[in-house]
Image (cartoon, rainbow, N blue to C red; front, side, top):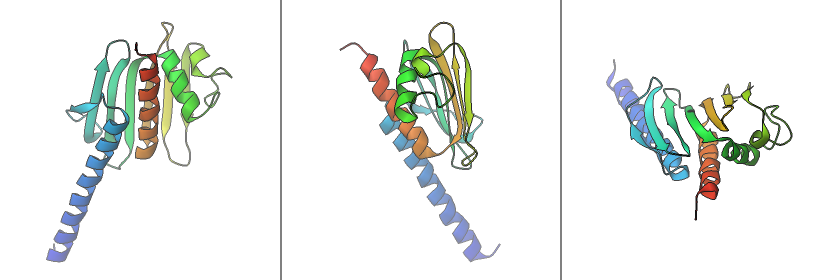
Length: 157
């Protein structure tokens, strides 16, 4: 390989690493409970969190610069607040009361313009699991920020 090609690839790699670090900083600024963890199958940087009564999960980046959230055990009322804040009620056909009042079941949305996939599973016990895949970093940061605010509103003073 020619030296100028090697230099260009090296420069690209440095820039890519900086972008991944900046994405992690955006995620932890939005949701401070996240902390670095071993990489998941996404092949990119992975952050995890766990807090009794609030849920647990991970946020990771893939090698295409898209982000994935996989959270479980998040109270349904909190998810209702987040989804209403981010999208408004009934975006996922969960009903006019939003996810806070949604019946148990799986709700999904696939964004044809960005290829992002959104799955929210409302469980019988009042908890939810969330899987948002292949989303843009700024969209994930907005969701994490809304989640942090909703959880903070539920915490005892």
